[in-house]
Image 1: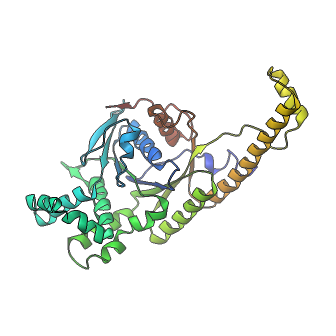
Image 2: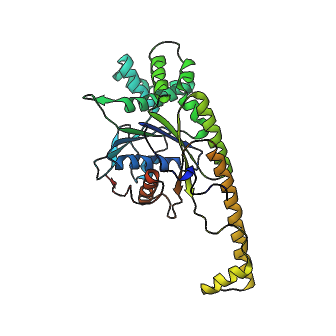
Length: 336
């Protein structure tokens, strides 16, 4: 029925990039997937940065922490020597850092914030906000100390699919702000990084019509912009509960009797209706999965977490991201 477990969907995922941008329609669980991916990468011994740029403090909530400051903070370690650090990128703090870096304003820059000038600047020039946010991510991705990269991998919990193309297309945004100078130079450097082989944009979706359509649109948009698309990640995938084909009342009655459950007409009729609804839902999911397969990108399926996104649930997702299925691989990561 549609796509089978023997198709490319079941391939073991690969994560060769250094900058992993995670996007998806709101409600698909992109923040949880970004956190799980950071844990998965750290489990193999990599030093990983998990960054967010939307001001929602979603990372802090997932890990049971207070609001994250504008500084890189260790939130998990692995037995293999890897670690996850988290950063909530704040546009005002990024602008202060930018002003100090390029214009040496220092205390004068902090005075601008007290006067409200920074909020004013990012409000009247929204493109500046994205240039600053992506610029900070680029700085972390390429940062070196003693000729060694500080981070082996950076995972960015990015804006949703409806805005991801504009957010990542910083050269177009910067062109509206400046023709020359540091802003233009910085945006061009970010654009080169985002279009390089070390970057991959992973799109998270559910097997529902609107998230899948936004995934198709986002992949097309990113491809047009020349930004590399990585994996399509199907979140909250549910295993099939029934074999294909209609479910007969006699079959149901026998199954109920064998389980010691009531076999009256009302129970059998109600259960049959639920079974048919499940099969109809599966047919729709198979059709949507076929649409995703036609994108030609690797597809990773993550299990539905019955207890919600707990810390243990993140480990389960991390394991599935590494192996394609199973709860074992990320379980050696501990919070700090």
